[in-house]
Length: 221
Image (cartoon, rainbow, N blue to C red; front, top):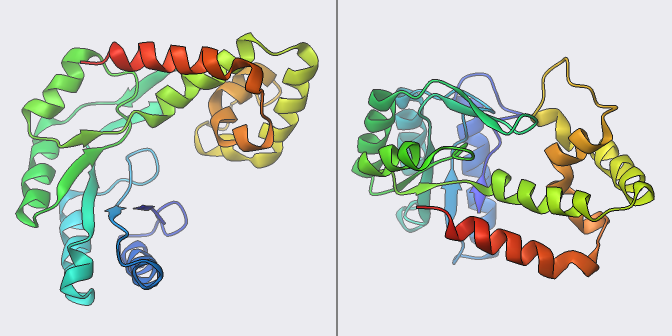
């Protein structure tokens, strides 16, 4: 379970760390088998290596050891963000920052995961693994393939209906800037449609989507 309160607790690292601690304590009582991913991606909040070090020290000091051991992944950052509307990465890759975070997280016995790995080239992905990153999240890109497949097979009426659902969800706000044209129905759906599939199902194209996702995954290094 990814514990990521940083969009709400965005001032420094302490409040986000406290909320992370509180969430893990509650969840571990509900199910002691839960395992966790902590910290956040560049697009939500910048975290320095010292921030992540302080968060890990804080959690280790305040969680029972067996619960702290259930933290499996720590999200690290390399300076790269994500622009879903334009289907590209943003920012500048910083190898030294990445490697410092990797070494520090590994010293706590945790695995590292970088988010915003969507749209990276094979060479850019290999750079991460060459520097001992354990995992890369490409969920938004894969979900966008699914969304765009929906759009290809929707009628105008279905697009209008799905747009209203997506617009009302406000999930698009996370991914766009102040100048985003939220009246562009297809673009708004492309940005946040994957958050709203449970509210608007088109089972007739499930097999098409599965085939597209399979081909996308097979093309990864």
